[in-house]
Length: 447
Image 1: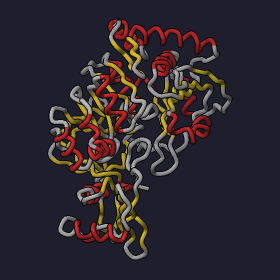
Image 2: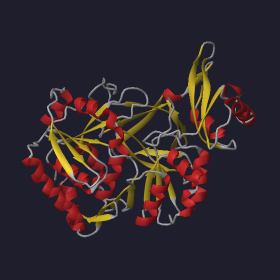
Image 3: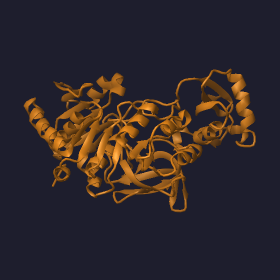
Image 4: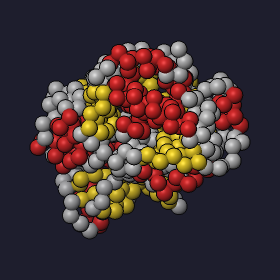
């Protein structure tokens, strides 16, 4: 069986088991299969053909999920897009050479529009010639212009063929994120239930977990920190949770320790992946450890010059708007600084985030962990700032519940850091804000 025939066979076995839960509406696997078959007819009737690039603007609604399945079956090139990135959609349409776009509204009603962008990128031509479905994802652009990442879908979906544990899973990570894509297909491949988040605020997420008895929450360290600081979780029944996975950024030890205390019966698993490679299998040393084994049968890992490199069967074909990042042997430099501890990796952070103060390396997450202990700080983001003599200095943006003069805050931080951090690691500049320090993907701002 090729493409997703194997997945559809599993759906038929599942019958009336719940497949998707969207705005309190439960659709079974039989419902999902029926929607998929109707999408096949509708897309063909509207002129969609094999090899067409089709943008799907939505979240994890029943219409969107079944549309994605139909496009894969038709061997189209999927371009999932979330509404949070709407300001960049026109550029994304052009780069991915869209032939059609499908939009889902708040009622899950859909509209198909034909587009007419140039269709001559050699990687897209290569994928069409191989007679494969494809996937285009866009990076967050946190380190510059968003990159358009092109995958062949059979390679990316192959790992889901092996049966794993079944969960009722919240789709917290976004529709256009590799983590969100991975969550969706892991859950469907194991005949679990996809629970659409909708409202991704702390209160909204806790409410959905309680109402629909969610078992698996894939999230980010920043969101977990917000949840713990707000204490909203304490006013909800979250006893259904069995597993919380976290990734996308470095987890502070303090946050992981607090999360384990708040959810004593829940397993915690650190995940690792990139849009260019997919999500690797992982195994944390323990629930409260930041050491993790990563890899799996389709991945090789190594450390070169202190940075993690990965070679994968599911690697992207390349960028549509940037040069290839692979070396001659197919290794991808992740840009993540790591250290080996026994048979595990400890991920320190992005090399581009590391601050060089007079030749001394400063890891932002290490400083943030200490600053987060200061009374009154809700959240903190640390970055480097250019300096004529030192190369860079450490600066901190601290989120407070109530405003406080920055000078007073810097003095308070300096007193707290004495004996806890080396002098060159202590922030030379402090900015006090009251707004959150995370972006719409719940990753910490560092630029």
